Image (cartoon, rainbow, N blue to C red):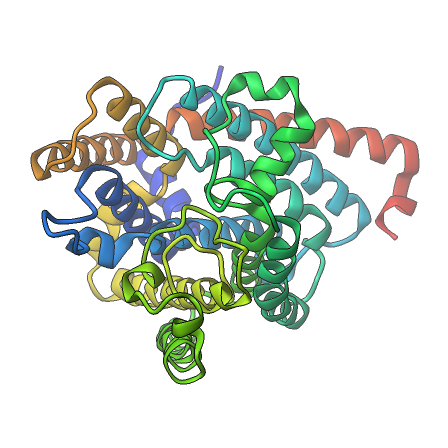
Length: 392
């Protein structure tokens, strides 16, 4: 039998977590809930507050924190100790990817109005495997290169194709794995090819000491500078260097949500700042906002511990809460503030109850148990087969 978790043990486990990271996850969830439920445009076609604040940014924050979580779960600032440790971590990530990916495909089958992110998230887990032993400087440098190069590659690969995503892949997509891979990596709502930028940034962030105040301040300042700088660069390219005129001159087109992809008729599309466009500008801007939110969350968790505890409880079980939110919208879709408040109230209640009893979210528990079992099996197999040589 598994022994009951005492309040002291629960408190110790909470202390081992970096609460500010969980707070940032809570903000990502709240932002995604807002965009999913509240209208993103007003009667006159103008963007609403929810769209301006959260559209594109919440999902990007979710992805950056995925990378940070992977880094923290695989040694944090210390990294992995050797080849066998890398293999064991890889087995755990593949297990997580399979469970989360299938869950995402199943959620789509419910007919939910949400563009479900979980299957894309799962592919990012797999992509992270060869990156686990890279140092911070290499991860950061590769992120800069990827931010610029991946949208260019995507532009070339999608030339002549559709400029928006097709229907979301459901469980039936497993029957055509090649098409599913193309959808998840290149043409879907959250295309993994450019989104590897977020993964690289998150892995780099998770390898630095997030418990230091100076780290939090550095992330906040760097994020603000990057976010603002990306928009300034976009304005220069579009307004001063002729990009806007080349794209027809209609400013509303530049801010239109692109759901993962941009048209390929002109290279100037790579200069637009539109949410979910996965252009270099969009990636740099949303990386900046993600870093700023993470830095602010780390500081908030220190300054207001009660609020950090509450938001941290929400951010500690993102898979369970996100899944419940998607199922809830499949059962009762809508677009109004009252529905959002119901989702937030239910989310808070569930998170607080789970935190008070010292447990995990049910889906987090399933994923953790499966991953732990596979890691132990792989560790035992490699130890008996290779002995100490596996560590070299």
